[in-house]
Length: 134
Image 1 (cartoon, rainbow, N blue to C red):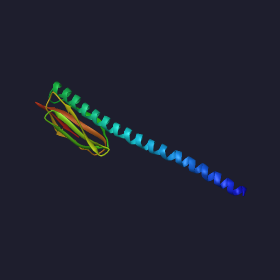
Image 2 (image 1 turned 45 degrees about the vertical axis):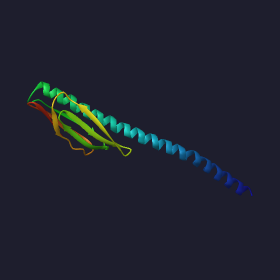
Image 3 (image 1 turned 120 degrees about the horizontal axis):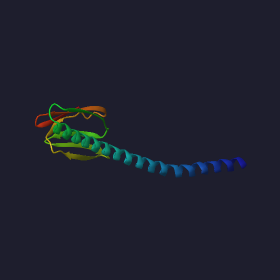
Image 4 (image 1 turned 90 degrees about the vertical axis):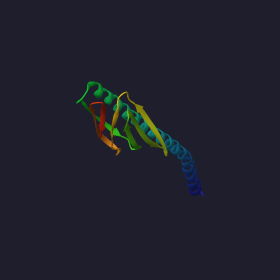
């Protein structure tokens, strides 16, 4: 009889701990995903800003000035368009696409690879426009 009571108390303690742990796990998971999405958007915004600032710098210095940026391309970036003085990064978070647009006072054009990871981006003044490649 005493062994049955101990076993029942043990089952009740484990059940109570499980009922508390499951909601805590779900809350932790929700906030982790939210933070991950904010980091992706922040990194994408930083990349676009660095490209525009560097492009304006090399343009005003003049040809043949060149800058190489070392950046980290986050996982959620779907597309990058650099054309007519605009840098547009499309990032996917929570299944939604968000466009980050930065404009420049100079004509910027070029192509970037969107494969995640560390990248070297070359920004070069070419007369009346700036070429971005990486």
